[in-house]
View 1 (tube, rainbow, N blue to C red):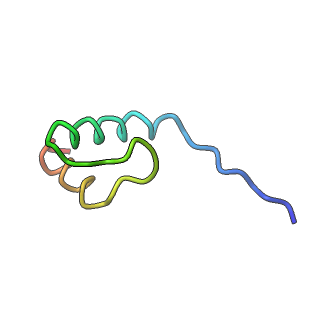
View 2 (cartoon, rainbow, N blue to C red):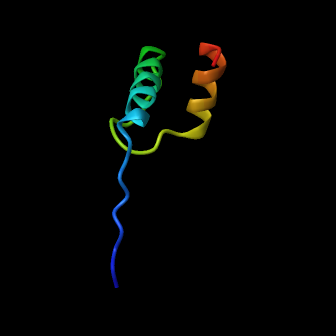
Length: 50
């Protein structure tokens, strides 16, 4: 069985980094890697006006 690797775009890295920095500045615990919780993404967009 052939396994396909998922290539991640570096375009997704910048917004994730911004969300992580925002969360840390608010005192919200967030991991350095992996998926960001959807509630944090929603809060970030609501507060950032995106």
